[in-house]
Image (cartoon, rainbow, N blue to C red):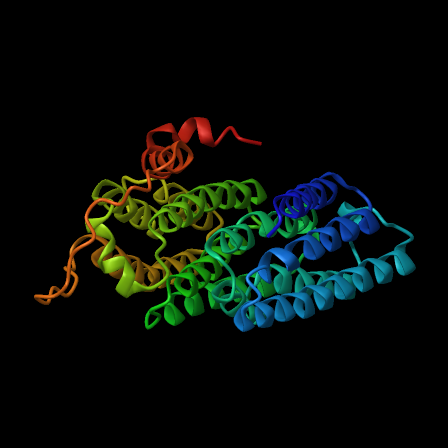
Length: 346
């Protein structure tokens, strides 16, 4: 892709995100989401591969449907209450339609079907954008409207997302699909706490984005797309592969790594709200995710690649690990001792 075109699309992504997260009016929020969608489409389809074209078509159809529902929801609310303010969403039908629209944009169960396919058809860096930056504006809209939403509906969708994200990731061999189901599972954790502690939803999203960015950048450095390629990655960049294992375990939520913090806080908050059963169920469902993260970590560091007599190993690649990747990996592993500081983030 032409560098100037890539710059324009990247700036459009930033503009769309900024418009949505800073707006009070539904029409402005909708405009920002539309700019985001239109900027992402060329980035998904830039390789001109049939899978990329298919992915961009699916992405366009889903996002257009979700945007239509969001606009319809805000118009119904304005019709009955005279309010276009995002925080004044009070009509029950509007709240239901908004939950559906945002769930489609995020990829929450039962509107998750498009997300693994779109990630599989995109490049690693575009997949990183779709899994982190593109989820930020819808998450902010959920945050702003959280007092009006139905807690039972959100809890059901959250538990279903955590279950399906863990279950469907078990038999995958394509790393982008595994990361897509990981994203669905983490969205379940963010959604379940939204009503009771919206700030905790944002902290979970920030830490999830940090860890996911570190993993995608590490995979991009070694050009790894499948588990079979990951098995041979240790011989190219041993230090990066070792830290990648720790980052994957952090995303799984194992202590004493950074990823343990949001899960610990969410379970604690659910227990305070006397939702012990919900906390127990979602904690047990995270074990499904832990299995495929351990599988990735095992492939990255412990499994030896096939070594027939006529095969030469690829020792230490010339591609160096950049500073950003190293910094993100360190943050995604070692932030747990800074928990009191992280909790002061607005």
